[in-house]
Length: 139
Image: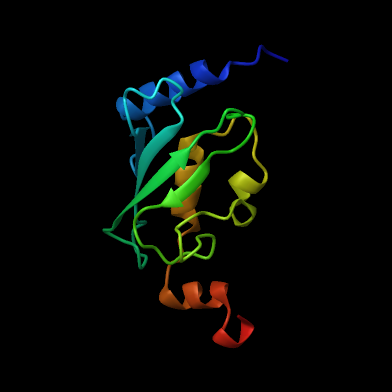
């Protein structure tokens, strides 16, 4: 087993990758405040997947990496209004139990991993959104 990379080094790697645009083209991320020495608060964007109800849309998220990141996942909150089963419609918070990469978090996962999975998780059609939420009678 290799050496464990400390939190700040790991976040510096993610910051460099995000700032240089070296990650997936469908998402981007960076520090909310360049003066945040703990590198806790991040902004991200996700481009809606093609051929879906989210095509040509840009969604903004806030990500918070706590003191135990990357051993524990970041918290994710949509700033943009979005209708996804894993997202609380009242506050935009992503329910970690409903997103596999957060529910089964591994230290190797990154904020980019989460953004890509959120993009993949987007339903293709309005009926898929409805079916994933259940009927009004179920609520």
